[in-house]
Image (cartoon, rainbow, N blue to C red; front, side, top):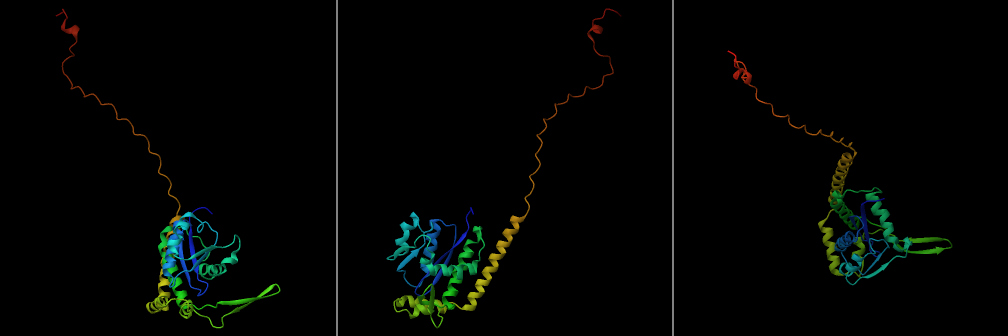
Length: 252
């Protein structure tokens, strides 16, 4: 489908399951760079490696030149073409987070882009702080089937960050500050309020688009030329007209 639409950029950490989302209007390299910078700033720990797919939003000149500035000291890799399981963690979050919150619709209104970015930030913050998940530990293959083994107790990404010995203490202090600054009920209220605002704007824009087009005004007739000036009326005279033959007449 032609045109520009909103897309959701998803970043997932494999070790802690920490996920950040960012909404972009279009898939240009500049929008992708802006989204990656916002997601990296929201991550409470440094990035050691980045693996992307082969989309044009990630394979472009702008991102190649800015990669070291966005991810200093990080290794870069990409998935094999047409192998979605190379990015299985992100694909799973696309279903669990992106399609769950933003559904399957297409939005082509750039007016609500800042609101969608703020909604994605609040949703990511709520999920990372207060939504527990089960992490896959390992799996065994038995013939043509796989047997998966998960954690016995679900944990939030925050708990995994605090329990991970490889995370620096400065990052853990940042996580503690996030927990103290936010409340799950307040976050849910902000999310619901922002959703209602976005729905009102989309409904108003849809109603405006559905209105019938106004018919064009009728063509104007060309302006008529002004009438010629009228001669002034001669005043009435009681005497006879001054004919020359009367003035030169020889008869009495």
